Image 1: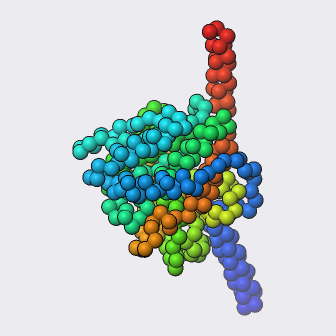
Image 2 (image 1 turned 180 degrees about the vertical axis):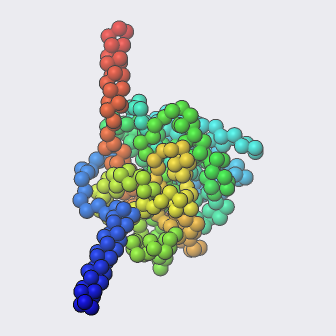
Image 3 (image 1 turned 90 degrees about the vertical axis):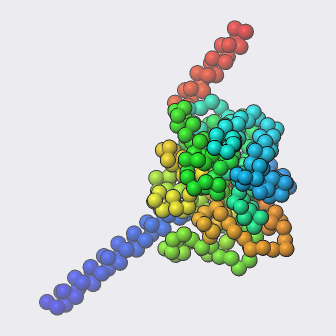
Amino acid sequence: MSQSLSSRLIRKLIDWLIAFCGATLFLWFITTQPVFINEYSSSTSSVDTQELKKHVQLLTGGYAPRTLDSGNLNNTADYIYRQFSSVGSPEYQTINTISQQYYNVFLKLGPDTEELYVVGAHYDAEDDSIDTEGNASGVATLIELARNLAENSNKLKIGVVLVAYPLSLNQTDNMVNTGSYFHASSLKNNNKNVRLMVSLDSVGQLKLQNNEQVHPYKFMDFLYPQEDDTINLVGRLQDFSNIRELKKGFNSNSSLSLNTHNLLETFNKRQSSDHVSYWNQGYPAVLISDKSNYKGYGRVKIERSSVQLTDRLDYEKMAMLVNGLFQVVIQVETKDEDKTHLAQGSLYNRAKSLLY
C-alpha cells in the first residue's frame, strides 16, 4: 500500500516537473524568440559610418541642448528636413503648445498602399544630455535608413513613413503631448492602417566597460545575458509575429547581438517610449534600443569620460542596424487588397499616358 502511494507520488512529481520544464521552455521561447536559421537573403545597401558620426556630432554638439526651452528643437527639425529633402519630399506636421509650435518631420517613400510601415525616432533630449547621446543615434539611423530606402524605392512593396518627433517623455510627463501621439492620432483620424511601427530610442551601442545590463524585471536575468553589447527588441505578446519577422531580418547581421523582449503590455508601458503612442491607437509597434539600465529601455546614462561621447558610439553596429531595418522593410509584402489597389493604379496610369 505504502509502495503504491510512493509510486503515485513519484509519478505526480515527475508530471509536475515535466509541466514546469515545459512551461519554462514555453516562456523562454515566447519571451526571447530564438531564431536559429536565417530565412532571408541579404538585400544590398550602403551605409556610410562617417555620415552616421556626422549626424551624431551635429546633434550632440551644434544642436545641443535639445530641450523645450533651448530654442534648438526647431533648428533640429530643419536639419532633419534638409537631410530628408536630399532623398525625397518631406513634410512638417505642426504641434501647437502653450509656448510655441514644434514640428514632426516625416518622409513618405514607396508605393501608395493601404497599409504603411512606420519608423520613428524622437530628436529632443533630456537636460543632462551632455552625459547622454539623447537619441542622436536613433535620429542618425533614421536619416541613413531614409537615404538607403530612397535609393532603392523601386524595391519597396509597401508605403514607408520615416518620422522624427520633437517632444518625447523627456520633455513632458503626459503621453498625449508627445510628437509620436500627434502622429499616431493623425494616422488614426485619417483611417490609415499601420502594418508595424518601429521606434528607435538610443541605438548607439555605447562602448562601456564593466557595465552590465540591468533588466527592469528580475526574472529577465535568467533569460538574457548580462553583457552590455546587445540591441533590445521590445514588444507585446500580441506583436509576437512582427517581432519574429524583425528578428529574422536582423539575423543576417550575425555579429549584431539582438535580444527580444515579449512581455505583457502592462509591463512594457513601464518603459514608455514613442511606440506606446501607436499602441494607444490600436497599432502594432515595437521598440529598438541598446540598453535597459537607466529609466527603462532607451535612456542610457553614461559616466563622464575624457573621450568624446561621439567617439564612444559603435558606428559599425549602427550601420548593421540600418542594414537590418533596410532588409526587413524591403522584404515586407503587400496584402491582397494592396496588390489589387496597386494594379488598378498601374492600369489607370497606363490609360492616362495613352490619353495624354
